[in-house]
Structure formats: structure tokens, C-alpha cells
Image (cartoon, rainbow, N blue to C red):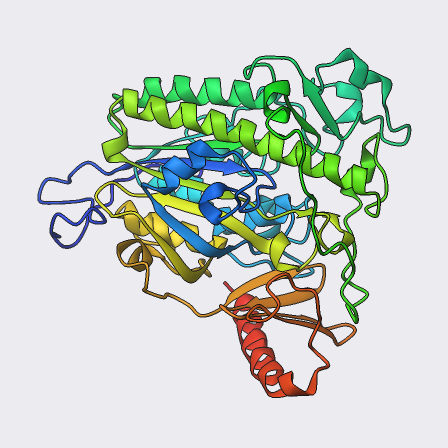
Length: 475
């Protein structure tokens, strides 16, 4: 029996015509939500100040939206980040949302996912592509069975010998990692946009927009693009945009970095890889990543054009985000799985009909999305579950703040970030990491043992322990 049964919820008061108030005297129709997530997407876009990348569609969308410049994930790995985001709950090492294998329905079985809460409150909910890391995680919370082009793929061995058509060039099949049977970490194939999996995700999402346009219910349509996740396979025309690309300038490990901070091994499950000290390898990694970002940028542009053509833009909230960041050679790291700012900071761009565009430096985190959508959709929050705070006040005024700190957790490391500092602590070893973004935005020097930061470190440590206590409370 599906536990997410629909019952109508009515607002207790009559609001003004503020777009965040969805009900009037006769229950004004709620706004739809188009929720677009790209896997491993860091804020590598023109609208985030990156001049070397081609993202005209992201940038156009940003000019119509609120761009959050200090948005962070709560766990730098897909499975844990998505479980945290979609339940609105912080990770809780070692029992909840620990790594990519986690399932929200197992780690937090009593929590109602965002999809289930919206379904319960009258939304027609659809999941396409990669939304939850595992397709069976809370699958019954959606109005329809979650869709993927290869529904049996993309799990622990999702890239195994091209079983799910991750590469399209016959040449790629000549480069296989014998331990994993995975192919090369990148591919430039002379194929149309529709050939790769994300082309199928776009097609299905457009079909759903057309189908849901005249629905009697508002919709929550989630579109999960796989790129720029490894392997970096994208149509050749996007690779051609980057004939010569620069690589990170800080290709060194910061001194006195805790031993817990290590390079990810993920890319080494693929073939044709090399050491992060190999500049040509790093150049190819960054080119492949950029090609995939530009590919997703184009697909997103088609999706936004379709929304306009269907006359849905005026009553549809659009949320664009990445689930965590990714190292492209910085600190000699390639991948995610650490507590550097570049790995935990994410793009978050939100467009709400009736609200002005802007750019905000206010601190937000992915657990804030759940309560924010509840407020925007005119429904109450689930009781005693959510750890985040609604950022709707920031949508109305980019100078507003809803919090001063955000919390990230990774493999026993607790991380607190604010507008100036990144402070991490490993309880088991008592190791610490402190970066001062005011003088070191690239995080090249750990200042946790610097005497002039001792008082600051003590204050940050107290804040971190308070947040951790809150995160570990009984929900």
C-alpha cells in the first residue's frame, strides 16, 4: 500500500497577491515546480564569474533568477547529498547519509521525502533521470514510478563494460580498466545531443511538460541530468569549444593538511587515467568536464525554451542546482570526497514568477530547499523533521540572511562554513583544518595551528559542536 495518500490542505489565512501565497479565498492554483539537478556540477558557469566556460543558457536563466553565490551541499558525495537534500535532514555520521551507497528509506525510514510530502499535498510528482541516487529509494513517494532510460543500471557497477551505453565510439571500447571493466574516463563522439543518456532525459522531461501542462493538479517535475559526472562523455561539438584550456594554478597539497583529506580514487575506476601531477591528464580532465557542462547547459536551454513555448514559465518555479562540487586539479585532487570549499560549494539558482532577479551572498545549504519549496508551494513543513531553513526571505531581498553558518559532513569530518571561514574537525583524531577566505580564497594554507587564529578557531569550534548537536538530535 502506498503510504503517500493525497488529502487536501487549505491555508488558514487569506494572503495578499504575494507570489509565495498560493491560496486565496477559493484556493488559487499553486505554482508548478521544475526541479533540475546536474550530477557533480560545481559553480563553473559564466554567471558565477568563470569566464573560460561556455554556459549561455545557464547565464540567461541566472539573469532572470536569484543566484545564490554561497550555497553548499551537506555531504560531498551523490548518494548522501541527495538523501540529505530530499529529506531536509543533515547527515549524521556514522548512521545516516554517510556515502554514495546510502538510501534515505533505510537511513531515515520515518522521514518523508520532499516528493512524498508534495504528493501528499496535492502535487503530481514525476522523477526523470538521476534524482535519488538509487532508483528504488522512496520510489513509492512519487505519483509515477521513477524513470530512467536504463532503469536497471547506474548503481554500484553502473559503468560496467558499457552495459548501459555510456560510450558511443567504437574506439572507446579498446580502453578498458581490467579491474572494473569500465571504459575510458572521457569520450568525444561525433553524435547528436540526443544520443547520450541525458538527451533521453531531456526528451522524457519535455514529453512530461506537454502532458502535465493541462493537469488539474500542480506538478513537481524533477529532471536529473547525469553529467558532468564521470565518464566525461559528450558530443564532439562541445569538446571543440575548448581547443586550449588552462589548468588550476594551485596544483599542490596545502601544508599541514590533516591526513584525512585525501584525493578521491573515483576516476581511477576508469581507463586512460594518469597521476594528478600529469599536466596533460589534468588538461584533458578539465576539458572533458567543461564539455559536459556545456552539453548540459544546452539541454537546459532547450528545456527552458520549451517551458516558454508551453506558456508555463509564468506559473512554474524553476530550481537549478548541483549536488556537490568537484576538484579539477586544485591541490592535486581530481574528484570529490573532501571538505575543500571547491568540493562542497554548489550552484543554486532559483526563479520564482513574480519575484525579482538578483544575486545573494547569503549562506544557504541544500537542506534549505525542502522548507523553501514548502513555503513557495503554500504547504506546511513536516513536523520535527527538517534541519534547514526557508530561504524565501532571500528570494525577496538578496541582502537578507536566514543563517550565518552551513554544515557539511564527510567520513567523520565535521565542517562549518561561514562568509569568511572554512573550519573542519575530525573528532576521532582531533585534527583540524581552517581556511581564511578573506586572504586565501583558494584554500592553499591551513591556518588551524596559527596562533593569531586561535580565538577565532575556538569560536568556530563551539558553533560547530552546537550545530552537530542539533544535527544529531532525535527527529
